[in-house]
Image 1 (tube, rainbow, N blue to C red):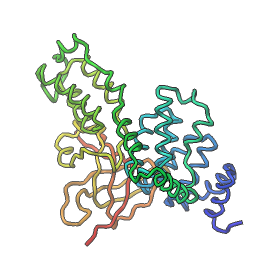
Image 2 (cartoon, rainbow, N blue to C red; image 1 turned 90 degrees about the vertical axis):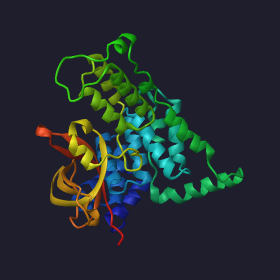
Image 3 (spheres, one colour; image 1 turned 90 degrees about the horizontal axis):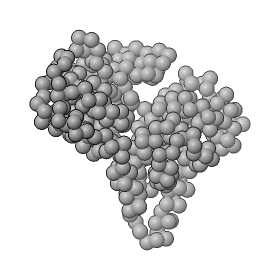
Image 4 (cartoon, helix red, strand yellow; image 1 turned 45 degrees about the vertical axis):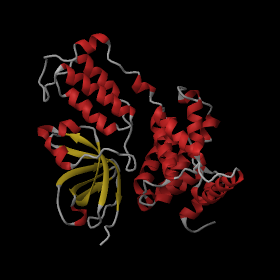
Length: 359
């Protein structure tokens, strides 16, 4: 038997002894929680034991340690399907294919989701869902890569148009968003006079803002769309318009570092935090005043100070898990803006990664 617990876990992984693997690794979490390999192996074991909560926690942690890792993304996508959040899973598969168009597992998963579009997760055969579970990256990466290349050579093609088309077609289908429309009467009376407003819009401006928010969602520019949603909610728009735009906001995907086309600066957010409530941002800086414990990590992010040349602002960051952060190493934080009382705001982190600035 291997002496290193992770090597021993690898053996149990290959033999699919999930209960033994969990019993071996779970007590070692305080020691190995910052190890991507540990988090991935344990997450897959939890997933195969039907512990969806444990799998979600450790796949999220693995992804926060390396947001480019395909294995963690594939695992998290499988968990999201089990949770009935297939729209978020589709986005993760698309992200994987955009980085590596030869990833056959992500391509097969998109085909699977298209075939089962609209089906409840509980109605899909469990064996079919298990086919989407991530394979061990240390065993499968080379064979899958060579197999993909061999297949391409066999047909005399060096590009992968079907996969690119899969990405495009998946992006084009957002029927739930497209189906949210203002009724004729709602378009005739899009503004009201009840309540306090931060924005006073004309009828034309209210309708244009609603249409813009919807168009941005359809273009997968969710963060920019959420800003327009907030603009309407903070305005004199009618209750009916606000209800419809709130319905649109429920389809916002969780942002990631690689698919965040609209990036809002700390100066914009600081000027009017309410307009950016719930919006995803990605800011670089140096961490300070770090505190952590079971289930949480908090620190102040010195935004823009990652190169120690300028300071754009300081914002509190909160993470829902314990992690080690070096105050001397720059970080990039992906988070949603959360607004407090008195116009204050903090960041609720989704992921964080460290990097070194080149001299």
